Length: 464
Image 1 (cartoon, rainbow, N blue to C red):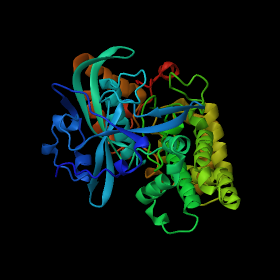
Image 2 (cartoon, helix red, strand yellow):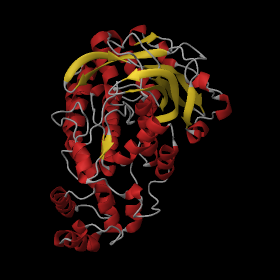
Image 3 (spheres, helix red, strand yellow):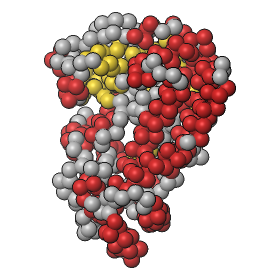
């Protein structure tokens, strides 16, 4: 089956998007194709040639979406500056956005060139692949395609296009844009989003209030899942927050190795706004901005808007309940109300700065790692306390990954392609990350953190 498009976003007001055309590419080359995703989308991989995947053969006119957003706290008008929606693919009753990233300039590119480097697109491919297999709701990468052009960022690299798949690319920032630039469309647009993502809310009284709560819940689930595996998104601007709870826009992201809630890898996050430990508070801040964009829907009823504010007031309680439930599972605790031992364990992590991933594997199978930090009296004391109420291996195995995309391994794989045009390390890493909860060898390089000095100097970039 080829791509089957039915793009409902084009039925919305034309202020919300612009028609675009992907740049011309002479000889696009598919570097990697996600065959599992092809199957999930009902696509015949033999029909997905590089001309279709790079937007050279179009099934309909692509669009670039307009949106706004708070970037590091500053509000600005934005839009798809280097991305184009090829169309909404419909398969087996589900709808998927098929988007090209790095496909050229759009009306929203501002000073950008609309291009992307091969390393940044391969990076997003492997991160989204890992997150999918870590059981975290995420955008998915269908293909990475190299172009013959050269793209200048921190260094000159071959250009590339990523074919990205999501339930949709509607963001908190899309609502901010509609509320400020097309307020007369806010009710119709919100109804469209509800019908597409939360159809069970249709025909209910107070559906807009319920809609906000659903978005808040799905977003909390997403952030708690990030914290479960040590993921640092790095750029939690409101335009990078999915209305459907999908992780996307893998720019300056990375995984935390040694536990430190102040962990920041992004070159543009100078003050730690989006550090690992700040992701909860940033979600709450973003949700407040989202609520503000919905406020006109409640103007006829001050009582209803008071209810919306009350939902926001429930954030801390809702987040903490999900967070402690997640941490209980990581520690193999089946009972409720064990916050004291969880907090004691977190205090130990803060003090020891042990490897976040391997610590839970060590608790599950003592002696797995030859690290002095696990021989300390404090660790043994916590281990003993947990043995009476937790450390249930079956619970832990479903929650604690054996493998994450270690930052240094990602860099090795990308550099191997840039320097030798070899994807062998990249594909080997994909193979390991296909089943991240199944340990193959505790002493393999894929389960080992980097030297601490590597992490202290490691920096990631937006690559826009």
